[in-house]
Image (cartoon, rainbow, N blue to C red; front, side):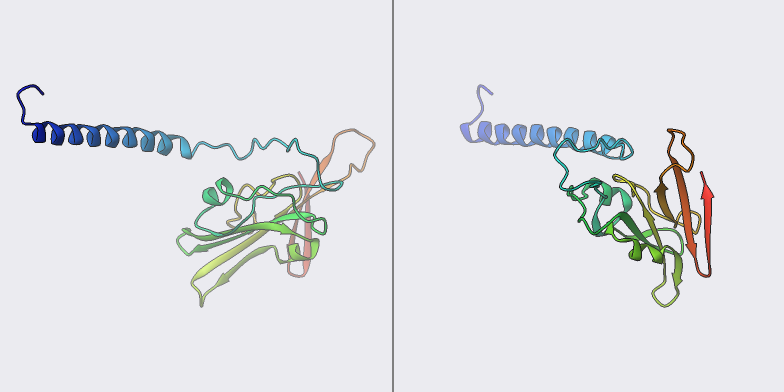
Length: 180
């Protein structure tokens, strides 16, 4: 920069600094964009902190998130209240399948009787509700009657050490149990 007027040298330095900062921001943004959709929500490690009561659990929790990924990524990490036993997911989506909102929370058994899908013609969306039992079990969103179920764990019926998982779908006028 020898031979440049001091004001021109200063302007050149500022432009160079801004260009460098923009380049750094672009690199950070592109790294975040590549890695942001690769979080494995299925690999949840049970918390190391002391549980507040026996059989404590956590659910993914959010209120009207824009999509399932956003809900899971920014879910509040806190223990469910003692009077709850299940995790509920409410998925509202348009007729073409685009998510309108995702709500996830801790609920009691009675709240889970609302599982299933219902089309709200007046509002122009479908709402599917599912419930599950277990630590952060509500990773996915229900999208149809096959996934909008009440999934519960039961103690083994036989004396074998393996546990059995029952999937219960509460439909109007009948209860369908399918052993996985």
